[in-house]
Length: 191
Image (cartoon, rainbow, N blue to C red):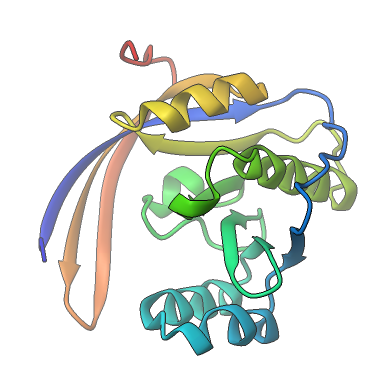
């Protein structure tokens, strides 16, 4: 385990129109994550770290969406809202008070089915349907080296919104401390 990490992320913002619903492939459905949903899809599989992490995210007021088949989860996405704290991996002063997509993952065996795009659509539609401001900006970030995610963000309609350089210090079994700066006008490195 690394106790001190330096990371660089690219930030995207979405200000476009509400996307239409996306049809999921046959056999897939989606759910808003609840404690019952976590017990169904994560507890039986002994995915302890995901179960613990996702329970904490729910308890902090984050909103999660899960795409699944009948027996296992396929893709997950979390959203922080203006009322919840920002994502744990970012300094609070950068992300708090905003809609921010984070902790997104599609399992290897479920990739190339459009599930990432479907989750983004579900999240944006949820925010737009529950927020007072229909044009509310939605942010998302990914690692500079994650070229597939960068391409997917731009193909969905997210626009570059600078970069974040951050330093994380992990104190095992206690906390992780994040410092960093968001250079909102910084051009993204080439893909």
